[in-house]
Image (cartoon, rainbow, N blue to C red; front, side, top):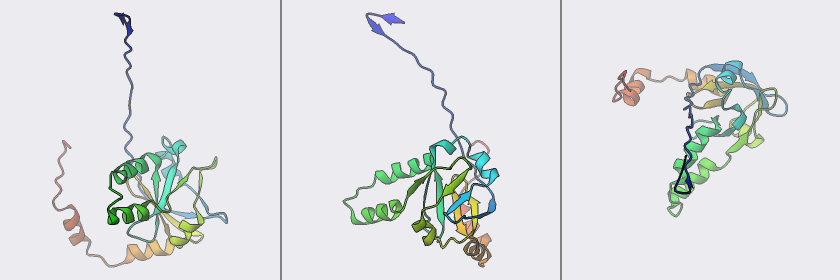
Length: 172
């Protein structure tokens, strides 16, 4: 449409919001180069984001790694980027969270190469456990994961503390 010498362009962009729901525990093996094959079920769930790659980093609470689809990492870094680095604790937090973060891209066979320093941090050997965690994936030493999962925890009390105030409404 042309009006008064100006061109008006109307675009309709079809945006699709991708909600990841990565589930499951998988036994995988690291090869001599530090690569592991994405489990088929996770790879299927990640097909739409596979080409953008991932960011792998240390978990903040456990001695394992977290694999973020790149879009999830961007959400996190946007929030972290709003912190004032002139405040010492913010600066320290940013350094601890961003340090070690490494972009990784699956090769043609669906393998991801884990940086040696991060593999050493998580004490990864040949046997690893790959665990879907909603929008991210955790990568554990098989032994460490089994130990954490076998630790005695009052799951009922933990569920009440964490989820007790959340209402489950079908309209949400």
